[in-house]
Amino acid sequence: MTLYSTDITQNIHHLQSQIPPHVNVVAVSKFQSVEKIRMAYEAGHKDFGENYVQELLSKQPLLPQDIQWHFIGHLQTNKVKYIAPFIHLIHSVDSMKLLHEINKQAEKHHRVIHCLLQIHIASESTKFGLTFDEALQILNHNELPHFQNITIYGLMGMATYTNDTEQIRKEFLSLKNFFDELFAHISLPNVKMHILSMGMSNDYQIAIQCGSNMIRIGTMIFGERKKN
Ligand SMILES: *Cc1c(COP(=O)(O)O)cnc(C)c1O
Image (cartoon, rainbow, N blue to C red; front, side, top):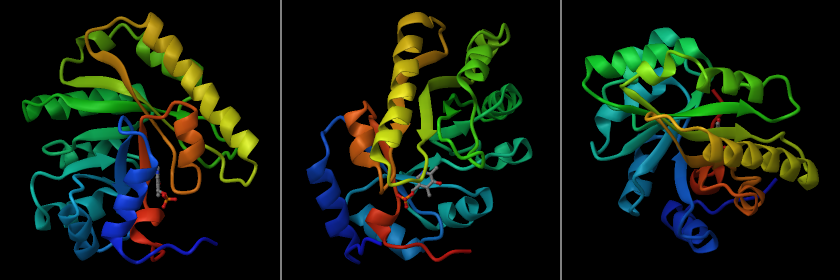
């Protein structure tokens, strides 16, 4: 187990100094206190990621309103309405039904909500996400062009939790190849293949080498999480 510094400001500056400037960092704050999030905010960080709707709703009103909140956990259709007023980017879209609901709720709030399709690239069966074929079905769906209150901005994926760096690399590269194919071939007004969200504390360096431009970092910024 790696030991991380307890100095959040130092952790953020250290991380930023290690990565190229085109890579955006989402600070994953699940199970972390409002005080710790505020410390990261005061260090200049504006992008935070949460996995659970209830937890996000309890923290969001207590924190600065210019924070850009990312939703990175499994999202149930019946909870979209709670985050629709303010969510900045939903990384975890994994069905047409969910996309339909996000579009509907975004319309109520006169917003366009930015989304990523979550792709299942890990060998573990427990991780959520679409197969490449399922993602193509969504992107080719004849209703998608009518969703005027969402924009699909790219893809998200999680590699297998393993020490086998070659396996992790293979999984990330498969997602990068798919991303490049979509970038080259999909031409729809509400699809812009700009963001490739992959890489966490244990594998972000490999992810960046494989073409990630958005990494989701929890432990390396905030320290170990209290398990719920
Ligand atoms: C928890 C989580 C992270 C951050 O994990 P760390 O290993 O703490 O960096 C990133 N992405 C998703 C989807 C997560 O659930």
